[in-house]
Image (cartoon, rainbow, N blue to C red; front, side, top):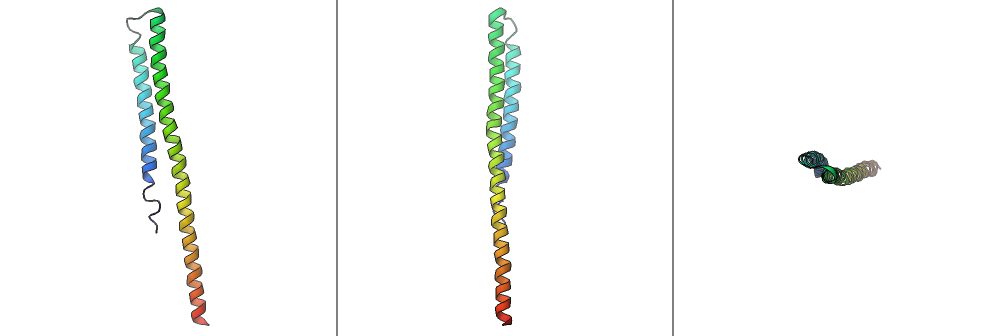
Length: 105
């Protein structure tokens, strides 16, 4: 009964991995942007910098767009599981009290 929330750790794990992958992509994109500046001049340099920054921001956004919903879903599911457990506990107490009262009478 209390294993309702046993698999929810995967949501935390996936959210953390998505965040780290977004951060890794940000660093990778920025490194690519600055590496692309070498040997270029003028408009080509601006294009290389813009493309690298675009990749960096894109991977950050993708990581966050994955991590945020996973975190929210995990919180919602955990709340639902706790409510179910609470309802079962409450019902169990009422049932035991009803049985005890029936036995006494």
